[in-house]
Length: 47
Image 1 (cartoon, one colour):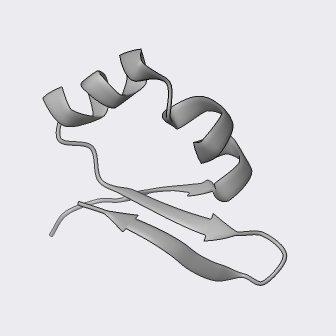
Image 2 (cartoon, rainbow, N blue to C red; image 1 turned 90 degrees about the vertical axis):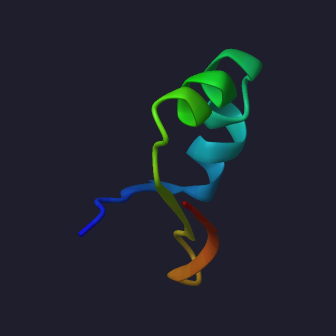
Image 3 (cartoon, rainbow, N blue to C red; image 1 turned 180 degrees about the horizontal axis):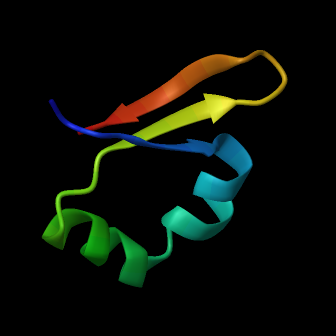
C-alpha cells in the first residue's frame, strides 16, 4: 500500500512547486496529498 505525504495547499504552493523539489518529487516518486486547511478538502492528489 502506498504512503502519501499530506501537505496543506499553502505549503505546497510556496515550497513544493520549486523546480528543484519538483525534480526530487519525480525522481523519488513521492506521493502527495494537498489539502485546503479552511475547507478541509483535498485539492490535489499527486501519485
